[in-house]
Amino acid sequence: MAEAGSGFLEQLKSCIVWSWTYLWTVWFFLVLFLVYILRVPLRINDNLSTVSMFLNTLTPKFYVALTGTSSLISGLILIFEWWYFRKYGTSFIEQVSVSHLRPLLGGVDNNSSNNSNSSNGDSDSNRQSVSECKVWRNPLNLFRGAEYNRYTWVTGREPLTYYDMNLSAQDHQTFFTCDSDHLRPADAIMQKAWRERNPQARISAAHEALEINECATAYILLAEEEATTIAEAEKLFKQALKAGDGCYRRSQQLQHHGSQYEAQHRRDTNVLVYIKRRLAMCARRLGRTREAVKMMRDLMKEFPLLSMFNIHENLLEALLELQAYADVQAVLAKYDDISLPKSATICYTAALLKARAVSDKFSPEAASRRGLSTAEMNAVEAIHRAVEFNPHVPKYLLEMKSLILPPEHILKRGDSEAIAYAFFHLAHWKRVEGALNLLHSFRMIPYPLEKGHLFYPYPICTETADRELLPSFHEVSVYPKKELPFFILFTAGLCSFTAMLALLTHQFPELMGVFAKAFLSTLFAPLNFVMEKVESILPSSLWHQLTRI
Image (cartoon, rainbow, N blue to C red):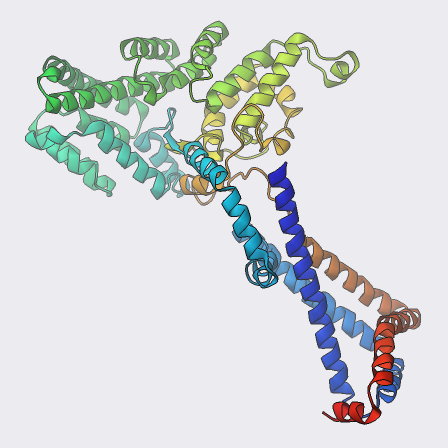
């Protein structure tokens, strides 16, 4: 609450600073205009009478031109402000006033004191932002050769960004290489291949490594990047499994002989787990869902500690395809734990199961009359929890926003995770009758939840990371929604007001002329009063010399 109040006060201060600056600028140019028109050394009474005579001789065309020009200038300012806000997410006028004008009024000391008082809180929030904005490997990532490249061939668009592919290259070097690779020629070639940026060079290096011996990582690279169909990728992964299983068994026997052998065994374990997981995903793609479920469960039993691959999310998706909701609930009971990191798959799958129990009979009108039952309350709370964790998902599940191919890496609670989830789970939500209608009732929930109720406050760094992960042709979903700055609304109102004045002056020149003269005489009344007082106090000779200057 204190942070919201301080933010409002800062915005109010900048608005006041800019408003005063604007008014004084207009007043200054108006005075210069009048001095230029009436540049004769007369007494102050003569000057005022001349001003009144000048205003009385103005025609309605002058007022039309004046208000029309003001409307045009305000419109140009509005267009520039809107463009600057769309590109940089802030108001240009507010940024200038805060950066340059507020320090002149003593705002720096206040900020520095506030910064010094909240240094500990800022450091904690920064550490939280770093952890919240960590990029994760997408457990449901597609095959680069059989799926991503085919999309490029058909549409001519690149579905993966350079940043995303660079992260994948780093993952491959971490999982598939070790310090002792230089001792084996084939592994040494593959160590260089994973660092190669050119896809054709990587594929050529993999073929070169296979000419030396059966190299599991070479088969992995060919299955991921050279295979043009899932069936071809599955054949290559089976060959990789045969080679990788032999390496794993040999390194398992030697892992206690030294740190070098231990590192090699760790690398062989990663390779074997990766191959089996991708084989299960191939089976799922080819329609052999039950076989895929069995492979995933066997893999999780064999390597229970390798949670970094998030194989349970692959298992949840396959079980939903089989409509084995009891098995899905059993998996959620194990992995939807407070001590484990959450994901959109966990939260929204739990919400789907709760919604499935009531969605076919749920009616907002009936619920408003009789109140919510226990099952309906549980479903509402589950959807509330899921939407708070990732507010971008409903747009894709409700098909309010078009889907694209998911990236190879995702940002939890970000738009990239929402795309990856909805790409595979939209069909499961459609299969449950009434689930999307129930979700539609809560599509406006995310807006007030950025402060956090069930999770940490929504991180502010997701937009920047998602823009790096998602292709340029995709419009990144931003949350919380950026409200229009005050100065865009101010210039829009000023432009509309002056345009209306120009139209009214053109249609009713005599009536608007009367109103304009009355307004100007009222505006100059304080100036007349001050000038009369000054003339009565100062000697006439001194005032005459000042007017001559």
